[in-house]
Image (cartoon, rainbow, N blue to C red; front, side, top):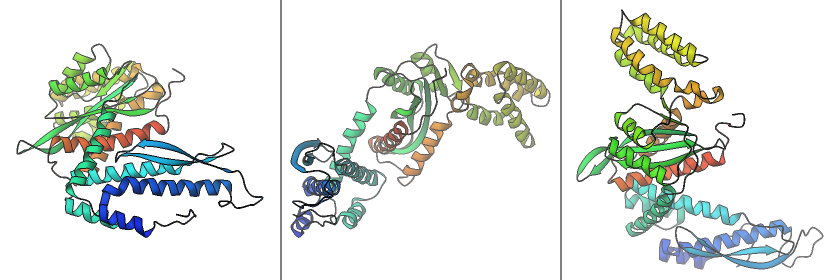
Length: 387
């Protein structure tokens, strides 16, 4: 095989792909990435093999084997070396990311309800060969191993802990159930966000939330200074059992939604919402509590149930005033996790009904892992430098 800028696969390789399908994929990946790395070295040197030129920037120095455990199989690549030691090919890392994306796509198509026949048709158009049901199963098994490692990875210090859940339809014991997907995210001391964990449960009862929270602690979660969530009864009981003594911020967005249930007339909803926002937007807790007292007094006669509810529940949304002003906007609600839920629903709505809990957990975990990696390599979410 010759190495050039625009290389094509030899006919014999294409014939092997056609005959062996995805069983030949490890060898195909090895050949293509080795070729790409050779091309990359040529571009780095500025000349072709054995070519003499004043533009030469270095000299080839053979190859160094490197075995990588991919999701398909261990593959040994030949890493091109440069005598001057100033070169390392990027094609290997890019190729492994593409391999990961392909396996994620195959598994995701399957669990989202795409039939094996349709998956075969898609892969045939993309790769020149179809894929069998057993190969889809192998793809899922490879993906499950990666996702299981991610869900059980060690955690560390988390300053702010966000908790929320969404529901997906899952077939369990022959019945279609609304199944809870419990999620946790957090902010690390370096200000970066990450998804901490996910669990698929029959519901949000205390038992399920407690098991989930205890699993986070078992993985090393520590240093939590504030928990942000809604007021679901099961979640609150589990939070108190596992994180006793840690301050809790009740999601202000959910509080405002809950308050609307106590407004006696539709025409009052906008005014009540504005009054609650005035409380939450106060510059400090003292003024927020003063505004709350005025609001309770305002509605004591015209909407007594609303006034009682405001007095008993709004204080749970004021814990945020004990934390830095620069942080409050992002720790007063679980909106960051709500946006994650919206993204998951966008990706899972094709499935309509998951065939089992494992398939639901697979798709949700894959999406969460992708989002968490993007968060951790992206911009700082909150700065702790001045605090």
